Length: 238
Ligand SMILES: Nc1ncnc2c1ncn2[C@@H]1O[C@H](COP(=O)(O)OP(=O)(O)OP(=O)(O)O)[C@@H](O)[C@H]1O
Ligand SMILES: [Mg+2]
Image (tube, rainbow, N blue to C red; front, side):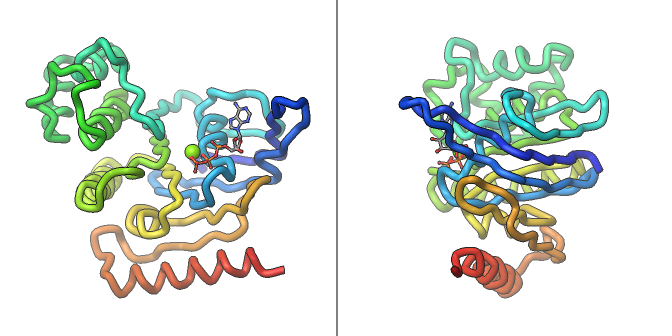
């Protein structure tokens, strides 16, 4: 396994001093080259989970195993580019070992060549998302973590970026974990979907998407969506 996650508990202290368990008994694993999607309701703990996997939050009980020498690329829910650095410099700072030509090629691959010298504040959300994705890839990650990469984009842009991400997974075989609350996005991108419960969140069910990303038809996608919805409604049943 490339990524093995077993989180017994993650708690937050609320302002009044009470403890809230956000994650409880959550386990899943990803094989090398596999794309997994974590699908769960808003506020269930998806970003908290990604931060733990990325090593940004060590305050939990349990364990996250990654092979030694793993390189993590992460695109946050908000693009979080450095505001006073150009798009080019944002990539260069993230990947100082990459040559300028390599960075320019990466930007060109995301149709960002024309925006290379702009500050992030001038970019639309769609462009900023692409820049954040390019930045996550600049270090040639062995694990790519994407937190709601398509949220709040308009439908056409979301579809365009979704296809880009699908191609990227197929061409680079990077092990990928996508967090989303959109089932269709998960079906289009993942090999396996992990369905999360509300807080304290854990993986309640796993749905294998056997259809290759490039071969997904509307009919097949509808079939997977029905299956996932049935799993989710069983969760809600008393
Ligand atoms: N630093 C923190 N301190 C206290 N509580 C927090 C902290 N970060 C997150 N939480 C709480 O933990 C819960 C899970 O938050 P998280 O951001 O992980 O959810 P999410 O599934 O990513 O939500 P969304 O779908 O809205 O992005 C929420 O109730 C949130 O208020
Ligand atoms: Mg979140």
